Amino acid sequence: MRRILRALCLFASLLGFTTAWPDCSEASVDGPGPFEASQFNVTSKNGTIIFVLHPPLPATTKYPVMVFSHGSTGEYAMYEYAIQRYVSHGFVVVFPHIKGPKEDISPLTVDPSGGFTIKGVEYAAEANGDSSSPLYNSLDMDSVVLAGHSMGASSTIMAAMKLQAGTVKVAVAQHPGICGPTGPPPWPSTWMPADFTAAAAKMPLLLTTATNDAAFWPAPETAKHELGCFHKATDKSSLKAGTAFAQFSADACAEDGKGGRYDRKWTTGGHDCPMKNPSVETRWVLVAAKLYGQLGGNSSSQCHAMLWGEAAGSLRKDTNVQQAVVNSPGTASIVV
Image (cartoon, rainbow, N blue to C red; front, side):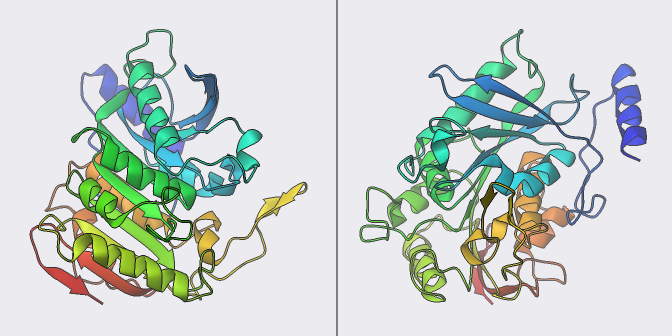
């Protein structure tokens, strides 16, 4: 099936047509898309290695870009299942490192301030204009998505705040550190509510967590504090429309004991729910990415109805979500 769809895309390209990205009613966000994923690694200008996961190249249409930022001690293998899903639906995923694949698994290698996330965005822009790059003229740099987990989620918020308005179309922060000034971790190793507010003024911004997340406080206090941070950032903001908080249930994010490989193990529950295969969070990262990275935020789309609506199949009605606050674009806050 994937080969047939790829052949159709190539045929359309040869005829001068452009590929219209499918809505969430046409492409299942709960399973793989039509594209096969490939990978190459590249050394950035500052000498660090960047992993690039991509659909078939050369591109028959320009692909939107997702920069995915890992958590502290993290590595690509932890997020492989989710990233492969994003690529299969037509995203080029840039996976930057702070220092390198080996160095980044050290708890002493951290960057919650947005630096390595911004490095990923800058690399994509440079590669798109570099005739020697495999990505040359293959990226839609007007459709950049940010996503990240834990420290990478804090970095995502900070990068979204620091980057020029219009650079990024949507950002998803999965299980970020507790906001400052006290955290944990304490500022400046975490984000401030004002940073979230400033980022949300530039783009839609989602924060996800889990009831059994015990990374920073004993469960369920981590999720409670993250919700408090979300409220501090949005309740009094005139620009809160287009923000959402989703707390997934302990059952949905239960540990399954399947994380890791022969030489390293990791958890997949609670704080590390994004590492599950499959994870209940992956579909919502993909819905947000498709809506703003492929459909231009189309308010008539099924992706829009799923993310911001109230009908069956929406984030609000997801049975895996224990608590949600959805500030739909142009509407008042709805708490469920």
